[in-house]
Image (cartoon, rainbow, N blue to C red):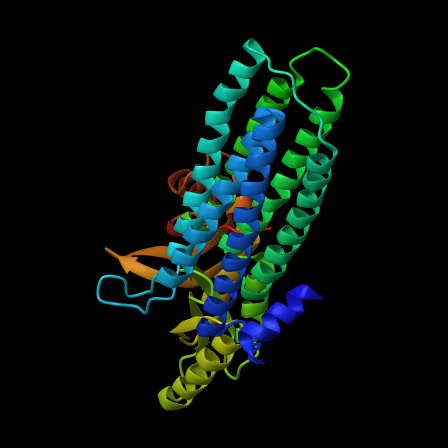
Length: 394
């Protein structure tokens, strides 16, 4: 396998793809290979396009030229994203990789738009496309080279979890479709007087723009901040609950600042009578082990639970049954009874499944609805609910 050989030559046996230096080397390898292939393809296709007077082939050549610029941007993106944290950017520069991928996407869209105009001119003023067997064969070979380049970038992107390389792989796959349509137009153009070249040029341009749109969509999502994976959330909760003294956990928050730069915070509950030093040692161990397992920085907030009277336990269980009838409710925590002007106030947090909410649902509307239900059941008591909305990437 050529990919394995290139990785072996580049990494020299260091296959730890979570390592920053390894990620940079893999990123450079992908960019340099893409740079070489796209420069060769753009020169070859431009020559063929001029030789046979085909605007669709020339458009395809310019598309490959934009991919050359994409490779350069990817190299710059990997270099910038690897910069260490500083005073202005305490969480590092990992998201610069997403910005580089976003620049690639907008460049692809711009190229597609420009060649819609060029292709329209060819429809209005058609020019016969010549058929050259050698040129036709070269275009077929170029399709194969793009198929390999797409698989190459996808393979490397998966290994180092790079949004930029995955975007480049998708772009290369789009180029396969583009060149295939161009080759088909050359064949059809020999049997009709219709301006096939210009029509296909517009189709190619629209495909280029659509591919660029998909790249924008896939890149903006992690740049803004995606919901964490549902399996990751489930596994972290399970692992945290396996440690000594931990009776429950909640409020897991996960933030990603680029590949290999993820931070998570979580609240853990434990009996208040446990020795502070002892539970602190358990928390330290938890932060270290769970963090290493999922390649993230874990920060744990200790949430001690005091002794509970029979009356308080009965009330908490009653309220739990009431709110669990709501399909959007996942759990409740931090239950306590406060006194204000000799009046008891029930206060607790409710975790709501954000994926089940309607557009009109808000924190306030959920809070008011649940408080009304509970106050109706628990006559004479006020209720204060803190709503925590939890979203998951399913």
